[in-house]
Length: 205
Ligand SMILES: [Fe+2]
Ligand SMILES: [Fe+2]
Image 1 (cartoon, rainbow, N blue to C red):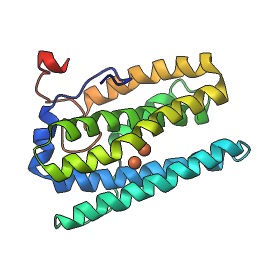
Image 2 (spheres, protein in one colour):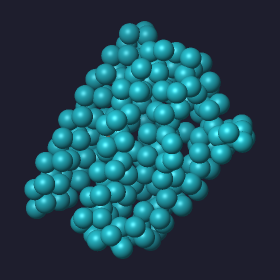
Image 3 (cartoon, protein in one colour):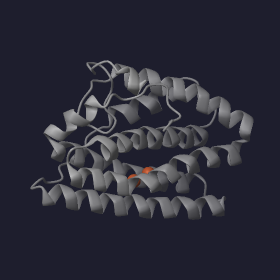
Image 4 (cartoon, rainbow, N blue to C red):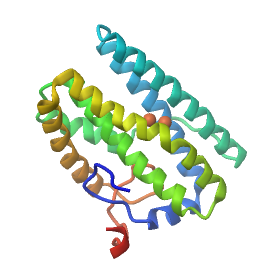
């Protein structure tokens, strides 16, 4: 399956996170919470767009439902949700986008689209390659709605800012996303980087 991203994650990431799935689940639970917060923030910035507000409210509810499911799985494995820490990947995307920003709302929509796309790519890897059947099922279950969110944010950017401006910003921030992911360490988090990652096999390219 193709993703609108510049760098593919090697399947070795699945073997890495499987060593300590509780760390992945805790990180991922916080990602779901942050996804709900980012939908709230977009509602607060766009109260005049009633259709968008309704759709974003639906996304925020869905992300909180995902949060509950992921926390349940974490606790079923004996893990506990700790305090939220900074997501270096998302923070870098926001910081880097500010260097050439024309619209904060457009950038928030495009960054949400890219974060959903990267999450989706990793969920696919887990759903297809994990040797842990509960992880496979959990991430396969989350896939359809994250795929819908990814498409929704790109569509919302086009409808609010016009196709030309939105596509130009998506193309620019997609390159930025590729640079950011290439400079973060390869680790158990959903948005970990590629530094130290084993090379992709020809089949993964
Ligand atoms: Fe989610
Ligand atoms: Fe999502």
